[in-house]
Image (cartoon, rainbow, N blue to C red; front, side, top):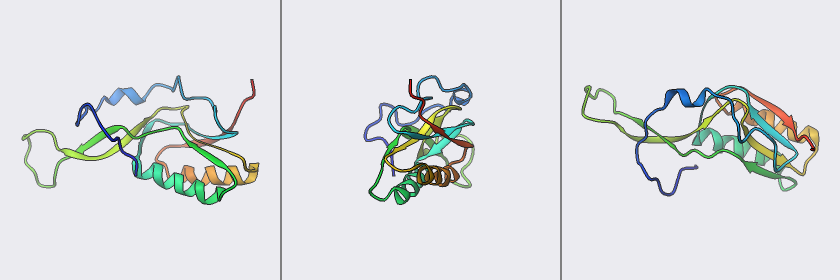
Length: 139
């Protein structure tokens, strides 16, 4: 699964309002022909990203190329069950990626429209936010 090799700070604040705004940087299909676009905000865990990646790679076989445009770098902490209040922040449990509406999560190229749409549709089911399949706009 994906997680950072080195982090500056082991535990982060939650920043609850930071995932609500629309994406401003990663909102276009840049590398491939087809992309999986997030329509709602949320967190994509490293397990969800890996599951979606495996689903896409099974559809592509060796015919296409895939790009993963998100990386889980935000640590999420959890305290043990039946631990009393206080005594500091819990230990790091897993990593997530902040996903904003409009972000392109995956891109694929080198396969037909039917294969790419089926692969991205199946990968969208693995994620915890609503997604849409988009085609690259040639400008």
